[in-house]
Image (cartoon, rainbow, N blue to C red; front, side, top):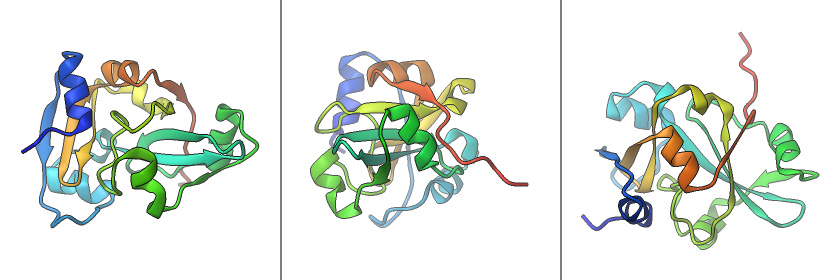
Length: 160
């Protein structure tokens, strides 16, 4: 199978990954379903979201698969009046990736990237390798470093 942009970048930087594959019939799955198919705890699976700010700048937000983005909190960290998710129809043209296969690494441009602060408590996480059906396990420090990412509180508080 041909390597994705994300995997080529990591190979060039000599950053090790473990590839995990799952059956999806080419359909985008949510992170919870991906975790189940890979027999991984959801705490370890992260999803990549693309937002656009009032300034018309794009941003990458990476959060745990079980969490929900808090757009107001994220906007504060991005110094934007407000932000919104980009339409799925624009995802490929903005990132080079499709829904369900969007990696935080290897996008068409180097967008400002924020990770939810919970990721700092993990040694390794799984993120998309840039293709539906393929996740890569990577050390958190290496992931944050390769995209020059930042940590912030990005998710809605869980209500019990």
